[in-house]
Length: 369
Image 1 (tube, rainbow, N blue to C red):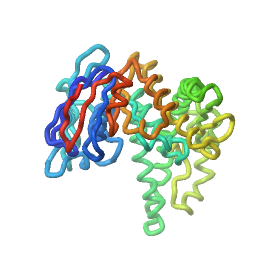
Image 2 (tube, rainbow, N blue to C red):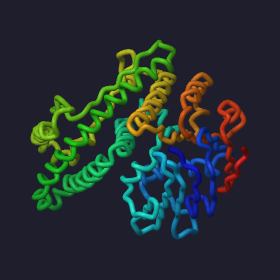
Image 3 (cartoon, helix red, strand yellow):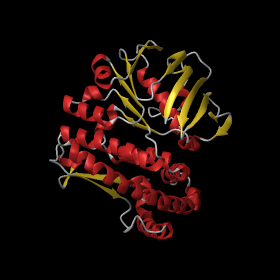
Image 4 (spheres, one colour):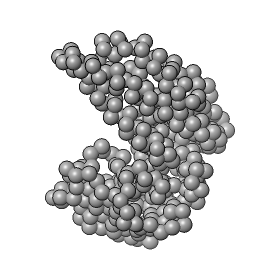
């Protein structure tokens, strides 16, 4: 799948710009703060319906504009399709595919992306929320039903959190606490099954990539961690639900005392080990970057196996953070699909990839090759 052409109107710092991409590698260069990442953000929006930089659609609308529009011609599953996304502050975003109204979750059946940005270099050392976000973004594209369950879980979590925070001032709130707890247990049971399956596929794909990347000297292992009472995350959802309910019952008073949700899929994590030792605790900077890159490249392989097509790979200013050996490994692995790489300098990367070069300056896009 590829994005052939994209038009941006009032999006971030783009007043009205278009860009055409090559089916292979595209190097997007220019000084900092000119709009390179904004361009990748627009492409990412085509696949998941939201930004990877902000939760608020209003922040995507450029200063002085009342709305923003992203319009793109894409080729997916041997079909040419047109995606239009209209963002208007105070209104629900409008998503159209070939003129038909779609939800954000339905975009995954048209375009898939794998994003690797500087923050992902901290994927190993940061808290569990970073690794949950990795799972959520990937699974939502592969399994649209997952995105619906996740949205419902987040809604329940927010309501329950408010109850636990405010029940002392308004004791009547406790009348609905068990209802929200039960809803979270049911949604968690389904999320856990999806995540366990994805984590296993990620381990199978990332382990050989990491072994090759590290020069056969290191072994990467990935283990899925969830609610302690869940003995088998691959069990039927009903069985997992009962196990989570058991955990919920034991921690109900602790939740009331602490004012926090202590039971549910919001506590999940991916535990990463290098040569049998916790990567988060013991890995060096080089090891963490190798592991993070291996996981992202493995994510790309999962999409290929799932859809029969490579997802669009978005590399946002990460090559400058890597030493030459890691740069070469990444560049040698990105063939076969469309890749968009942002960087401050184009000469070296464009020469090594033979890709098309686009220059971005002050919200204007110019094609060099």
